[in-house]
Length: 301
Image (tube, rainbow, N blue to C red):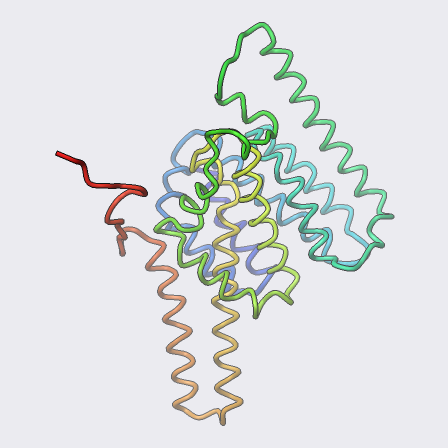
């Protein structure tokens, strides 16, 4: 409960520092009202602790790479919080490749950061922890016979996409297109053409997409709780895109003569989008139902 409450502040702070105060305020409000977040905040299990540490990692790392030269104190803080997230749940090791891809996207065409020695020190420390934990798990489980899949499959990445249990649409259905998240996904996709120039938006979307890809193809277990630690990134990207589209509507209204009708239309459309974000994300105000399960077919009687 404590980490769930603190995570509201982290989401608000990330939205404020990466985008603007409106994004931070709205994203924190939506996050605080999402039923899934409330559920896990009340559950003494790893998802909420891992989510809190992961969000700190995402924030610290971006603060570390957003300026030249890199800010060492933020990179060090990101290293510490990543280690805490990894020790909370080993599947969060995919944060490392996601952050690397995000660094390439944010600093596209720039290679001066390859000379940042402190970055290599942080990578070495995190890699040492991951290897030590994996070695300890391997040694501890060596006396036992293991057949098939189990939670031990989460200890290391594997080519899950080559195995019979692979479901390529699992996290698309259970995260991106779930009833409380679908509008955030749609707004994120709609905002890519308008917001991609913003480094913060590129960073959030790249980390989110990388983690969805890694969890879908490289982790031999499927569960909605495994994507909870990066779920706030979807909220941030969706809200940021909505606020950016709102601002573009206002700018378009000013270019068209700044008439009262144009400004009223822009404000109405923008407020409606933000209102839909909150309503659609809260199942106590709006419930969505599917008519049938995937692949359902009538029985022959």
